[in-house]
Length: 155
Image 1 (cartoon, rainbow, N blue to C red):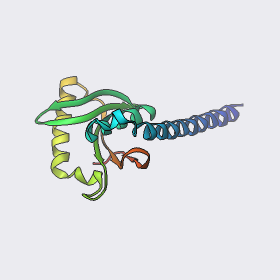
Image 2 (cartoon, rainbow, N blue to C red; image 1 turned 135 degrees about the horizontal axis):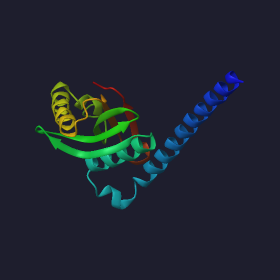
Image 3 (cartoon, rainbow, N blue to C red; image 1 turned 180 degrees about the horizontal axis):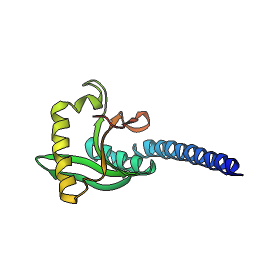
Image 4 (cartoon, helix red, strand yellow; image 1 turned 30 degrees about the vertical axis):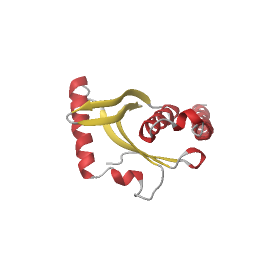
């Protein structure tokens, strides 16, 4: 009886993950289509990229705690909670890859700024007990050709 309930639980977890992946994929397709609407194009690419990343992370189950948090001379684009981990997310959006991939813009200097701001956030919130992680959301292209990549534990 016990092995049957474990097998059923494993099956339900697998089903839940499959449904979430389909939901995230379908919602992302709708997002890409809506991105081509005229009033969206009036917004700067960086701000649009942060909105896209925020919606994507919410769909993936992240709880967004803060956006555009400024501390220690740096800015954290998104701060989220993924299960029991505090996640600091850097969002990079590029219309094309002519100047390089978006994730390449998060160089060592940028990483140090993000770490310093993250330390300030953790100290201010007394969240030292939480595990921390640094993710990068790389967005390339505009509209239906847009590609989004979530790089977990990027640095």
